Image 1 (cartoon, rainbow, N blue to C red):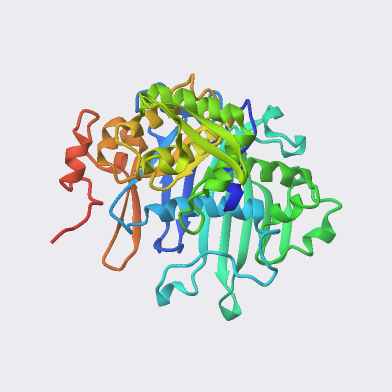
Image 2 (tube, helix red, strand yellow):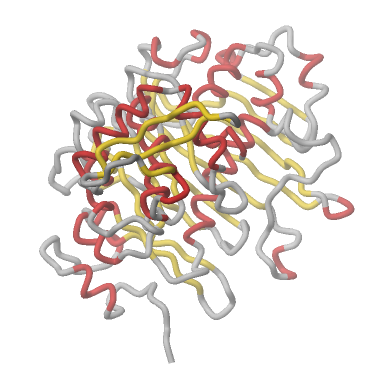
Length: 421
């Protein structure tokens, strides 16, 4: 990931919300699984938790999606699928060799070898791609992007199909924006492929049509390419820890993020007054001023928990500032359980999150269940064949909002807990 870990999106005025993710034959997910963030019509509004998909829509979705389950249950696979789509749309054309296999794996079973790997996302927002900036579009609706991959000769994984559809106002039938089946591409007027036939003929079997056309200044593809940049996370194939070097340089170039971090540090009361970035002989160096200590403490002497919080903060802050999506695997690692609810509250707070940013996270801290609405909670578990299933707490019958979810989860009422003994 390198420095891309902290590459962010752009400020926007219209809300775009990711509300559905579908995964099939991808790592531990064998059969089709859907993560649907929409809430039922009868669910009462909870300020800061549910937002309409588009202005005036009765359909709502959550801002926070938290995934719980035992180790190796497939939680990371869910986030990995979302981040793979981001990578594919943004970087698949320029970041790999023409003959390379797409960097993902199917389910590890003989019967899955000939089955396609499929990932689809649905999201809401402005519809007009010709403007080059979705924030200036007046037409609103929903989108569906779907990628299918197959095993080619020699074991290469390549694109089988790639499609993009939209619904004006989020109702009615899906309307084709473009459809790619193998090497054949067709498109509607809104995608404007006139004059790009020579480029289409050169789209590789391991690259996105969008990522390819964006390199040739195709305006609709550039718009979608830029929209994908609003997703930032610490996971691609594996969980990635940004290097100290990249983190220091990011803070050195973004004084506003340093100021935002210091405001949160002081409010959360980590015993630290502030972080300061100084120029050293080999690049920027971070020092921390502590309550009661005479001299600032250097980065390498800080606790692992403090360093984890400082490293994750740009991802969280960037999503909140741009209305994007922060995707963080194992957010609770080394971060105090009392700090975790505070991070969740940032996304629930309309003053802190006026652009309705979203947070997708995996977590083992069961205590966090008490700070989440049941519509924000998802579980992952594996069966005896190693196949992951994903389900929501709202799918479980007789779950009341007044339940002690922490106790019920640990006692196995909701499933998705380690089996010991």
